[in-house]
Image 1 (cartoon, rainbow, N blue to C red):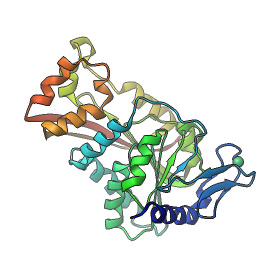
Image 2: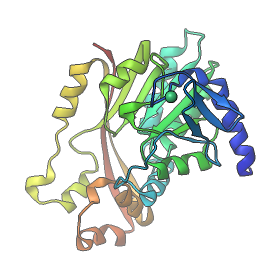
Image 3: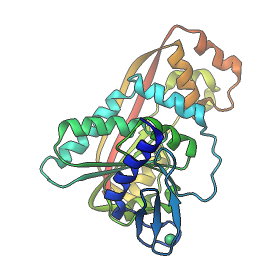
Image 4: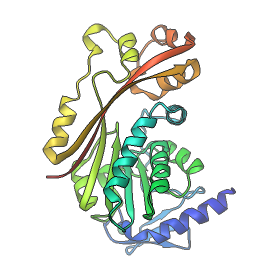
Length: 294
Ligand SMILES: [Zn+2]
């Protein structure tokens, strides 16, 4: 599909859902103008990119999460490593929504290159007749650029979660996968029955990498503080632990190492053994929390 056609399709999707937006600079409502910009009543204007995503940041923010990381993350997600996670989350969402007839609105806060949201969306629309609106935001422009390239029918935005471009009470679900939270903002933009679904690592998440990279004193991981913060702001409805093993071939292992911050600052000697192995078993150990604001 040509970039122009893609931009027009994305602009129409934005126009249909323009009520969810508010200006991140002055909080006034926004409208899509000429199928090419989102503009507020005080004339703050945010143009659609060639591929139709909106960048709400006036200055790009440098993060350690670069293009290579997101490309690797996409390959790892598409390999099936997190299939069970995506299945669990989509089942939660369509079970919750079955009896209702309204549109499902799902925000992925910290969506990266968009593969998790896109895979969850696919499962949900196969299983429900509800209308579905998926919105992904990430602070990394590189990530959103990759997302908008391959995944259509989802609204993609470069945005700071601390100053999100949304009106209050716009989402039935917020998804937050292995990514920092902003609970005040989550509370503001969730609707009255809204549910936050947050995925956090457990003790044995990517255990094999941890054991190989770190000295024994740094090996163990605890999610105690993350869990306490969640519980301070949100009342837990469900907490599902998913623990399983998955076999990755050499190339996928390289991509897994590229995508995880665990490998940052680790010497090549420590990384090398993984690259040279043909097949390696890896442990996935995660908890999927769902909750409502307290
Ligand atoms: Zn404005």
